[in-house]
View 1 (cartoon, rainbow, N blue to C red):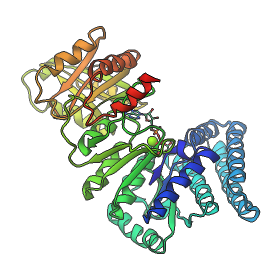
View 2 (view 1 turned 90 degrees about the vertical axis):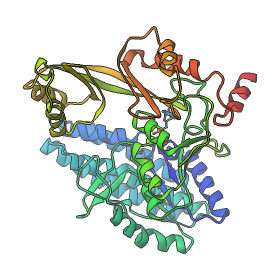
View 3 (view 1 turned 90 degrees about the horizontal axis):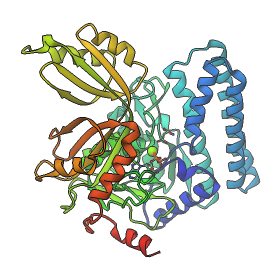
View 4 (view 1 turned 120 degrees about the horizontal axis):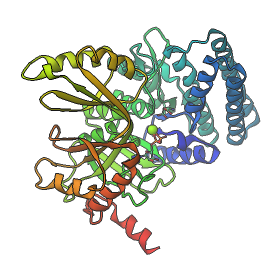
Length: 467
Ligand code: ADP
Ligand code: ASP
Ligand code: MG
């Protein structure tokens, strides 16, 4: 059971989370609980790190001091037993004392390495997992805190470390199984991990979902539950389109595609450990625990609607590479991709003509150096503030007229790049970021007015309309 930042953001949220876990225990289940940092804490820790690295020691320590107060106040509200509360506050103070020491050191050294960044952000999950474990005990759950860094072993690619499956399986058997066997509920932080030498790493932003799936996979769990702040995977981001509908069931393949192309509700790597062991993944709402959520399974039932969901990925750039010497030659693509590889830049979409190639990548500070290297081969232009819209559904390739319907729905918007056919279940295109929300709303209106009730929760929409 993985609970995201909003599910542990304050006393009320942690109380709801405890009730959900207690409900599973009462059913005779043996859950392992993975928690994110309290909402927004990771962002604030990164801000503190950036301030310290710029020499703003006072600013960095002020952020840390506000975070310390938030954690202490929540701990005092959560744990009423005086001795237990004092012990928890003591742990919180010790952690903030060591964080402050790192921030002071950083403000003298003025160099924020990925390794130090991981160490600093790890405090978010190290603190939240301690607090949640104490709150569970107070509420009658026999919880045991486990340091996730002793279970999730990765390589040393700080900020986006790759898990070592065999080692994780062995550690889960050693550190988690004995606890569940004794009826205890292990509580650990998501996102944080360590390399084989014990140095702290992280799995990348949003990585607590991935931890949940890794633990579920390592223990061959009955299910992997991702508890968040929405009713499940929706037909699009409900923040963009408030009338988005819950998708009741979706395939692993479709969910992976959606996650990769921007649906923040699930970290893209979450699906893989589940697929390997064919473990169903459920996306559930900790604020509406009675809702059955979304079930992600190997084979989803057939759906009459062409699309299951629309994802949007922002902050992308398009790189146009134009070279007449590409005409009628071979090996040119290889040269281009070798340069992307050298800069460790992942490409989302590619489109080619006789003498030009357009590629899309996440906007990042490597772009000028990448463009300079590509400039040795050809004329290069790059442009930021682009967004990728991705429609996912069963057998799009096999349905007639889909492209016409999609582009008719957004005929008022300028499309820069199109990709379809690479996968049977995905159609995507690139537009200006400023047009993205409008495009999503137009597509949603065009494709989800009469959705298949077997797959989408149309009852919720009816109930909302009749209110
Ligand atoms: P958590 O902190 O629980 O991991 P996240 O903020 O990472 O939660 O993910 C949940 C958010 O994902 C939702 O609040 C929603 O705005 C966003 N989201 C984007 N696309 C979708 C989608 N297709 N279905 C549901 N939520 C989505
Ligand atoms: N706390 C981390 C983040 O905000 C990991 C997560 O919440 O999944 O990215
Ligand atoms: Mg998340």
